[in-house]
Length: 140
Image (cartoon, rainbow, N blue to C red):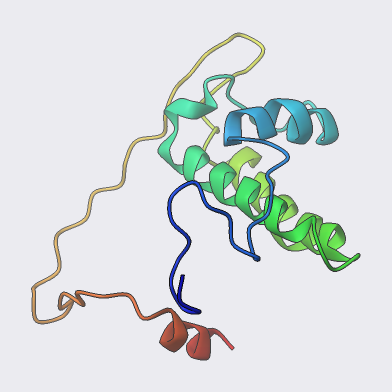
């Protein structure tokens, strides 16, 4: 394999991290929910997987956890401060993703999707490719 080539499927690279949790559901049930014990006034939905925003946010939270738990000893402190706290606040606040749900009564009421017009092509041109290096420069 060349120095810049990606590993073949099933092959690990030097940067691969063995996951503690194989998916977001296991992460949620085996780590996050047992660790996150906040007030009972926080909004939550037992059917979290039916909320597109929750799936996206929790999946990103799980992936950040798996990355930050290795290496730097402060990684988990950073994960809680920069990832878990804001993610859970966004999901469980009075105006968050689960605002219409009631986990005690097993009620799932998704928030209505906002309506938006499509932007004219001239204002939002197709990019075609993602340039991670260019984005990293922008983000600092």
